[in-house]
Image (cartoon, rainbow, N blue to C red):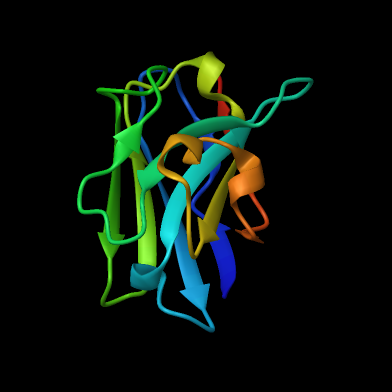
Amino acid sequence: VQLQASGGGLVHPGGSLRLSCAASGGRLSAYGVVWFRQAPGKEREFVGGFHRGGTRAVYADSVKGRCTISRDNGQNTVHLQMHSLTPDDTAVYYCAAANTIIYSQLGAPSSYAYWGQGTQVTVSS
């Protein structure tokens, strides 16, 4: 499966953004799909996502309550909706997918074989 992340840009603090991860070559509904982000000089950080077959997304504490991840099976896409953005949310955001994910390893980048190219989100006034 090939993944294409989009929707990044420049947002003012307190603003909102919706990122999309569109898939080709496979149905995302058959994969666990998550979002990571990586700020300059920092390690890749788990944001949230779905286990394969999961109906409820799991979120990192850093974004819980500000973030909604949803599947659009008709469009073969997973969305990441973020609001109340702060400069700490500035990063390159990546979507990733895997056929099988050990439950406790959902947040580990090494769990994922398929990655989108990343989309830059910059939160600044």
